[in-house]
Amino acid sequence: MNITLKQLRYFIALAEAGSFGVAAARVSISQPALSLQIKELETIVGAKLIDRAPRNLRLTRAGQLLLDHARRVVSEVGELEQAMRWRDGLSGRLHLGVIPTVAPYLLPQALTRLRSADLTLDIRVREAQTDLLLNGLLSGQLDAAILALPILDDRIVSEPLFQDRFLLAGSADRLAQYNEEGGIASPKQVNPAQLLLLDEGHCLADQALEVCGLSGRRPIVDLGASSLTTLCGLVVEGFGLTLLPEIAVRTEVSAAPDLALRRFDEPQPHRTIALCRRANSRDDGWFADLADVMRTAGRALLQTA
Image (cartoon, rainbow, N blue to C red; front, side, top):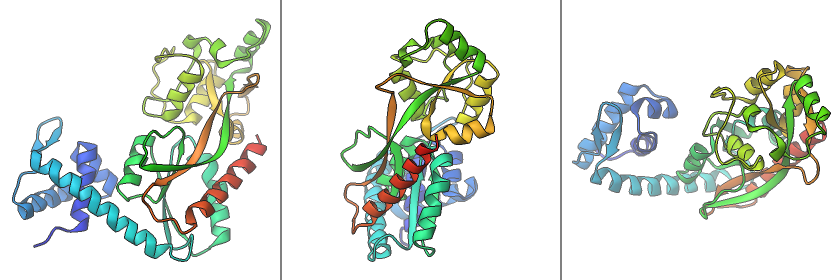
């Protein structure tokens, strides 16, 4: 019996997730099926790969060694598949990752444009936080990902698409209070006690803290909100303020018409959205073509804001 590529991918997912349940969900199989595949893999290599504990698991020395090799093998196979799929440019199947604070706003515009350019393009989208998408890129599970810069990894190549400015969002009454007090020119003037953010792990939350000059989280309510739509619904009801990316304005204002917005003075705070790929992935022009589509879609969306 030989090691299969599927087993290596399952093992990588398990090593990165640290949990059979989470890993099984990521690779879309049941937890018992994943456990069986890992046991078969241990039988094939003749070594224990996982130290199982009640609350977490750890790789054995053999498991760590196998993980290093598995990542290289899966990455090389991904490169081969990509080269064959895209030997004629952007066509075939595209595995694209997108962060959650971009996906619901940019994808409807971008995917329509991609479909118009090539109806045969098979697009597989994964929406996840930055760390998971970077792992997907490096392991070959994703061809490209739309992320917010900076990406501090020399194994990743980034192509900036557009600047996404931050606006102050809240209820009309709460923003009026700031206007009565002389306005608010900079995010650093926002009262930290009134700032609502996404739960930890979202890069947008870290960026919001940075532009507000805050070193830690000081929310008035520990929400653990996972979407901008949730935050906008809360601030409309007077629970506080949040920073809303410009790319989300049209969608969120449509969902919450009473949402009040205010731009900051120049230079307006912003994040840079970029298209990313592995540095060692083969590029026959597909990456530039994809970046052009995403850039055009993003800029068109921003114009409507």
